[in-house]
Length: 259
Image (cartoon, rainbow, N blue to C red; front, side, top):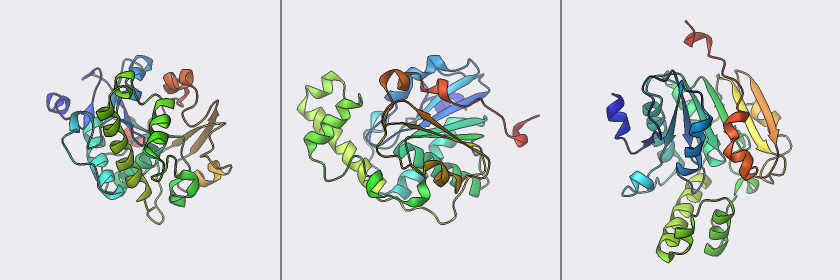
């Protein structure tokens, strides 16, 4: 089974650890792929495998069409998360749009009685039950191409070889706009909540985050909530992002996963 999982373009394992006891599964943010998470491998315990979900239309799934709606992407992500977990206990992490996707996937899996995460960690996002507000529309579909490119460069999404190639820049903009359209199509499911522990991380200078973020997330969590405010903006600081797993709360396996 592990050999088959390694050939699945929807799940990237930077260093397969077939004997691992736990998996950290990461979901991408708007316009992103698996790259921003790959360097976290060296920060994980030896018994934890890093598994990165790749959305359609990028990296190994470049030949596939982008997801057209949030519903399409969430169903795709839920299936990928189950393959990524490989039957082990797992932590599900998402940043920005990926935080909402992580919550949505966890809620879907719980509702179906499927293999849900033992904990959920979301970063740089307001509570999803509010729906998409003007504050959450960052970046925006009406932003000019140049603005989107500047933003992608600011957060490190564009390597130098992409910036220097007009065709690659055009592809990056197309990907970003496709993800923005999916994000903006999100509609919260009434009453959706999760029962696993939830940790919320956000930067103290992140203009996207509302002051009442802790209270808002409390409405959709049933298994305990921890909120950590870290230095920096939407992507913290480069140094903090590179070491972000060090800010994750210690694992506490759920009772139904303990022997």
